[in-house]
Image (tube, rainbow, N blue to C red; front, top):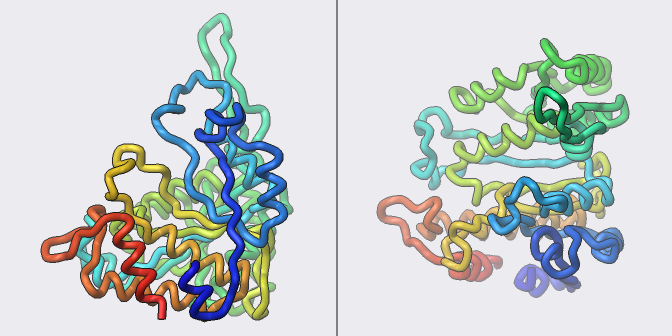
Length: 342
């Protein structure tokens, strides 16, 4: 961000704070109200990660992930946009055949504040016949309508093909989802709407990912499908995301909406402190922040081109390394990209 600021004559004010596991250790809670208020007052939030094996005990009453869910809810970040574009120079880093993934360029729009992760009741208890647990999958018409509109808006700016993913053959919430999608479609006559069951989508992402342009789906399905899609890109370390608080207007050249920006991966505790983590998803998340929250398209493109330049020159972190590439550390990769913001 410092290099972008110098190049384009901007000043960015950064205010760090704690969330998740480190917040539990420091303050006893995964998200303080003071932290939430700080985020509410910001133009955008750049987010790291929350967890680690230290807090993986399922019996804990307070978990790091609670902080992330509370932050999404508190900022009303209902739309998670996850672009997934295969970089030609990283074809060899993916476990999927080259002829399958070549040319893949898709976006997954995931609903972020409803569904199983937030539905009530959510509890565990003991009965005479043993332990029981319940999670509630619940959606309102408003929640479905607004996330579908994000999908339609994005599709209208791309290849005009929207795949709405549900489980309408089984779930009532999915039947409502599909019904509302059909009702909205006439408002976007230039977009072709296709319905797809989530299990079929999971298969198609692997055997024919080029058939997708924009995918829109509910919270749990989107969480799973985007992690699957990471295999296409070669690593979760390549995938950024943007979580937005309103339907973005892609025709306005001004600050669109407050958002939170983060790589789709977690804290990677198995390689912590080893300099092996891939920083590119975080760097590309900064580019999304420039574009969606600040309306700075030129600055976003400068960051994205710098990443492409570093990769084209053969620089790699271990997760995307192939024979003949220049394997560098986390810090070095960041320096290489920063130096190419020109």
